[in-house]
Image (cartoon, rainbow, N blue to C red; front, side):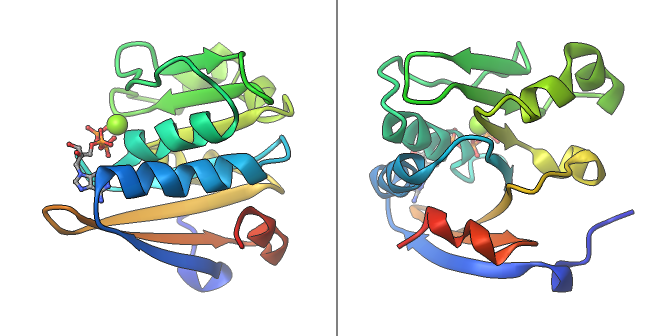
Length: 159
Ligand SMILES: Nc1ncnc2c1ncn2[C@@H]1O[C@H](COP(=O)(O)OP(=O)(O)OP(=O)(O)O)[C@@H](O)[C@H]1O
Ligand SMILES: [Mg+2]
């Protein structure tokens, strides 16, 4: 069952004009994370998902450079204020692969879970602390970020 967009509150919309601005946006949100957030990213190839994750990592105080974990599905970063689990589901063929990895342990860990290509497992992502991030390519260097959630309380992640 696909989620109906009218069940979601749009919490915030941002437009970034460079990679650096996208990282900055991620930093601000990373700083506000309290633990337990599931941040589900949806956006085409090159939309800026990984750059946004880089910012979240910096905002959590992670010094290690975050790169795309394309070949491992999940990369774990433990050096920040909260543990960060970075998933890239581009090559995922079936949700059972994630279940086998202990998916529900990740999302209930109290860390911050961020998922590239989250639309591939949309119906399995259920959490009280879920933030959807739709990233649209507007022009070469311009990206539109729409942040939405079923729960308005997630607005603590923004100004
Ligand atoms: N405003 C912007 N925000 C983010 N990236 C931008 C922006 N403008 C241009 N870019 C460029 O777009 C690309 C985004 O790459 P990034 O790896 O973050 O995307 P992605 O969505 O993770 O891609 P993939 O689907 O391959 O994982 C980079 O080359 C970056 O320099
Ligand atoms: Mg990426």
